[in-house]
Length: 162
Image (tube, rainbow, N blue to C red; front, side, top):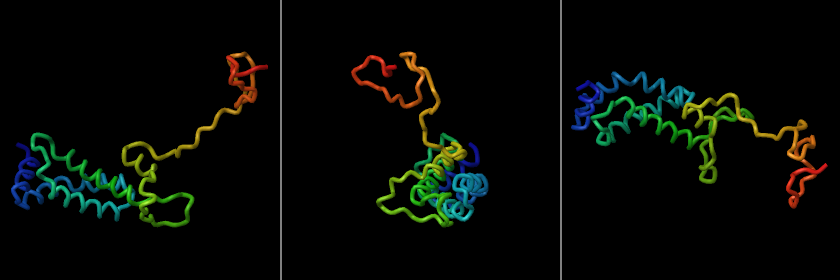
């Protein structure tokens, strides 16, 4: 049996030496992961502490037949995402530097940049709204008009007429 599983079993029995062993092996990896997800070292420290508390509280849910590190990183990721949902990410448009807590009315707002970064997707370049092309293009009827076609007729089989 590997030392992570041994320490997890010890922690499950209530022995805090198991938590000490797990923290000694995984604290750097978890902290770096959280700093990368959250982008702020002080916030990452808070979530780091919450991660170890949650891991100690919910060690009974850990399946000892599986590796410990992915389970622990999943706990850290879920707490980081919870934090990102509660706090708005900084906007490049605002002059304010601190993130403000969201109210009940904005709790469903999508902090997309931070969530994309947390899920591993690139937050740069920012997405721009899709705009239709403004150059001339060929339509099925053969005309070359700019988008949108101003001669659209709903009753016509062809979207354009010359």
